[in-house]
Structures are given as C-alpha cells and as structure tokens.
Amino acid sequence: MSDSPTDPHAALADSLRRLLDIAVRLRGDHPEIAGAAAALLAIESDLERLLPETPPSRYPSTAATIDDIFRYDFVMGDLNPVAVPVRFRNEGTTAVGFATFGNVYEGPPGCVHGAVIAGVFDQVLNIANMLSGTPGPTVRLELNFRKPTPLHREIRFEAKCERVENRRIHTTARCLHGDTVTVEASGTFAEIDLAKLSRLGER
Image (cartoon, rainbow, N blue to C red):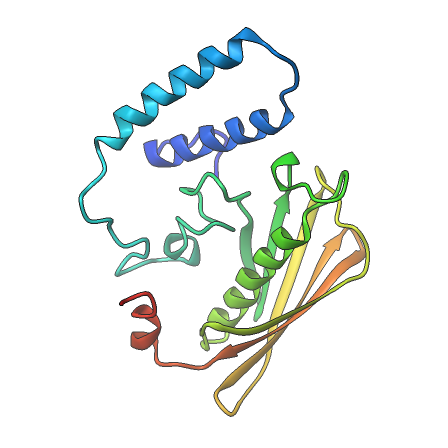
C-alpha cells in the first residue's frame, strides 16, 4: 500500500486506521476529543446513507492477485481499517508476510496480542495453501508461543504447505523478529471443491 492511496475507499480505510491508533494512545480530558467525536458522528451519518440495501460480496469474481482477493480481509485488506495490514509475497512455495504492529494490537505491555498473531497465522497459512493450489477452510490451528513478539518492529511470517492426505491439508508457519523465532504454528485445513468453498457463508 502506498503512503497516500489514490483509491478513495483505500484512503478512507487508511485514515480510519490512523484514527484507531490515535484513539488508543490518547490520554487526558482534552476538549478537542468531544469535538472530534461529534465530527466523526456526522461523517458516519453521511456515509451510512450511501450503503446499499444488500451488502455486496467482499470477494471479487475475478482477481489478478491475492491482494485483490482479500481487500476487505481483517489481516491484510487495504480496505479494512482493522487490518494492520500484513503485506504478503511468495518466495517459491513459501508465503511470506510482513507487518509492523502498533498499539491497537497490543496484548502484554509492548507486545503483540496473542489473538492477533493467531489471526495472522490463520491467513498466512491460508495463503501458503493457495500458493500450493490447495485452499480450504481451517479445521485446526495450533500455536507455540516461544518469545514475546514486539510492537513497532517489523515482524516476518513464513508458511509452507507440507502435505495433503485424506482430504486434509497440513501447513506449518513461524513468526520472526529479526532472526528470532517468536511463535510457531501448524494448521490443518479441509480440502474441498473451490465452488463449495465460495458458498461457505450462504444460509
């Protein structure tokens, strides 16, 4: 993502992302806070009127890249202000993600919340499965927290699909700060037809 997104939706998400960071770091009874809250409420009302009656699909029917598929994803989506976002690339069949986590994602003092790390692992393992041609929903996710993962430092995630057997996909991953492995993960995923995968949320 560029420093100044030209897509207005991406620019909106980026602004909200910065506001979230400011909101969790603010302290004190500043009069500006009440004014900002009122201004944001007015913006919220203006934008709410633009919402369609039926929410559109978050996943495009055609996409050129993995980033295109997951633009609304809460881990990597540039259109989702809750996302860090994590940026992915592939190194052969290994999915590699990079992120710098701010105070919004804090758990223990100065460290990334374990639930946030789990969410990122779920996606980085999924990306690795997609690179291997075997995407599928998560059946089991296991994490081994070895060391704290610090905030405000570049963190690297690596994942690789190890094997597929009995319609189960087995994938492993690790999280690193520099050369230090802070968390290890393994996941089991269901091997299902892509058409069925696209209909998982239907009722």
